[in-house]
Image 1: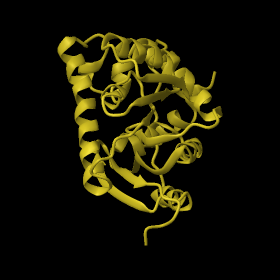
Image 2 (image 1 turned 120 degrees about the vertical axis):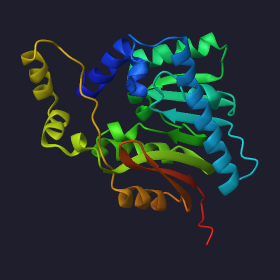
Image 3 (image 1 turned 180 degrees about the vertical axis):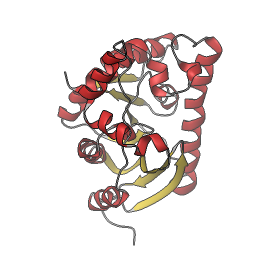
Length: 252
């Protein structure tokens, strides 16, 4: 098992909601019905916002037949996407996260969602989507791996399809830029050793990475995504929500 899969399987089993949204109120020990409702409501608000932005900047009547949410976690975005798209695929590295996402969909009688583990998604052939989506996910994936996933996602987008992908590109949180954080992030065994010295197994470190947006835009350009709209985000680090539409020929 890779360090990344081990990390997210730990959180999928022990603290799945906190791993998605790192506020203490979403920790397993604190999570109550009101907290769960707030958690899932935030997904509904997000999907409604990107839906409005797509309608304003791309197509006013855009209605995806097939959508994918990469890094779906427990289904926070998949659930509202299932009310918009005819079919939705949720992809995550953690089988335990996917199991929780399935339970959340079953509890709401949602039957147009399929869940797939990341390795299976990357190996699959012939997948096509009208909408590809990922938010607050790539920031936890090493860009050396993440850019290959982006290429795979964009490659599965049909002509005329729309992508909404989120990346962090600069940090102002002191911890993220610290020497210790980078050591623990890049060498997980050192973080494990630290936890043992301190008297327990402890939680795995949730890593943070920054992406070179020049490389992201170059990839989109090379893959015929000629229309683009960007909304900046900030939640401890500087981010960009990139909206784009794939066309076989440029529109200019």
